[in-house]
Length: 479
Image (tube, rainbow, N blue to C red; front, side, top):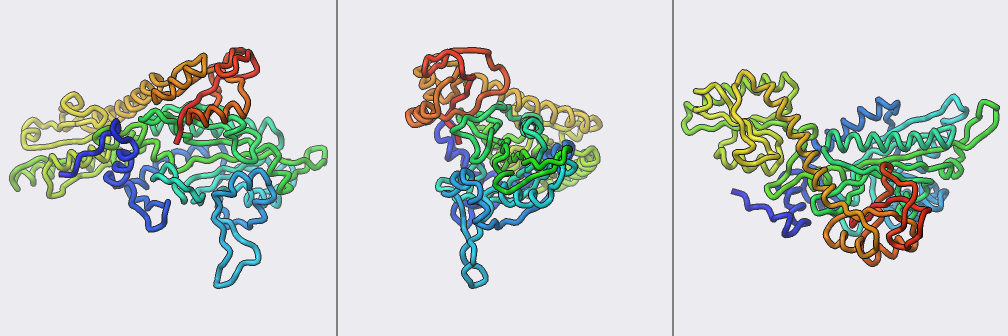
């Protein structure tokens, strides 16, 4: 029997790392700061990827691929952008045994190389909007790494679009933020708050940055996806122009937006418990695991015959499943699959055969309370209904947890109390960028975003006492 997990209440970071490796999501890499994503972990990413890719195509975007290597001079053409990424860049100076005439940067993000391509592809208003996405890996030389959450190399998608006007670019920026929120809420069962980032937290080179923020099981925030209105900054740096209908040259307005394998970490931390993973059915590699229960070889044969029949019915109904016929005890298998977070376990033993029934055990509710007996001839519909229940319950639990830890504050002391209690502080903010930096230095909390919903017309800043000129802001410690 495997050793019990560290409790998340005792050491959250250790608990997280144990889940990543013991649930077979990843393995350590010989390269510092990188991980090997194992099949079980990669299938969770594939579920996220499929959900997003479908939504991207429904909103008119096409996939493309751009080079991993970017000429260093490209980054220097957008000063704020290169300044924001300089410490994280990996640079190639020697290739093929020779020193390169111009160093190549390993892609940290692709605004520059895609901007150069856009300048060649866009000629007139008829070429707009240009809506592209790429699925790729990027490299950012991180000092402190954690599997999935922050690694030197990670997988992501990055969308890049060009538009004729500011308003069209802003509409696109918010549309893609909504796409991220829909995936997080509907498929990952993670409630997120959509909002505008502060100037301090804005993406380097962007006019505006928006984010979806999620609360993890330790109360910290995780920026789970970002969408940027780049204004005309990159268009001017890379000469992305178009002839308008009056036959006049204008600079385009561009956007970029990205979501990464960090979302796998979000799923772990938003739903995991003291036993292990709890995967939302829509993203789980296996939605159901079938476990035979028997003592004799004759019982094993009869039980497996029925399980194979039920497995075929479930597969035909589109259920992702695994029949666990390993030579291990049922208890070992139960513990193993609970660790790996499979939403529903189907158990079948000799007594169940006599009753023509099966046992269904849900991962989100452990013990007898989460078990039910259903007739074999109704198992497909029962599992279909149960998966929907588990999906909805995980979202409800995560939402209740988040809402219970968001504290409305009217003073700086109240913000400190909220942060010390491992919560988020929500209050009216009219402070300066320096005020924001000071709060981070003193409390470790950052301004996560200004939520897009529920903004009052006026208010009194909890930090400066100033009335008006601000917005409601969320502050929290973050990953």
